[in-house]
Length: 231
Image (cartoon, rainbow, N blue to C red; front, side, top):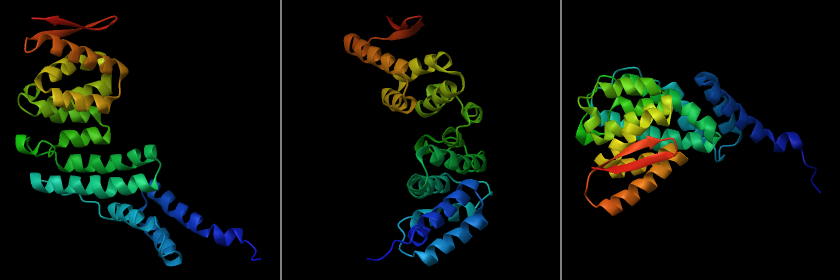
């Protein structure tokens, strides 16, 4: 019977942990060295592709402004499909979100000069600031959009920014406005917020909309929750 060599059989784990440790430190040079050691010792390791994406992301930090909406969309697609996917494979969920935040923050800074376009709703700095968890910077970016409170996407962004920064009391008037202006955006935002009180608001909104048909109304915050008043 072959004796188990604990050191040899756990070496892949140790090498993999070395890469993860340097990734979390955002030390590109040392992460590349650790990744090379892992690849040489275990060229078929399942973690190599995702780790390679993350190391490259640290190595290829761009600072030039993004001045084209299509370019920003392409960079966002890369972050979402490749970098975020790799981070979720390698890091625990909470750590993955924290690791990605500087990536979104750097991109938001690069996209600061881009104007809002209805045909490219995601190609703006505001949703990037939200992804980074920078609520006040997101609000500032949204404020640059003319009549943002009348446009579904910016209204949804501002609603989330105010909710994250100051809680439901600050956000509920915008939530009510969003519910009437863009129900689909409202529903999507509820999933993102994961707030029981807001879910209760949605149930009341659905019931009121079903009862009232197309008639107008307003929602009022009360001590007990939300109350619908018809016009």
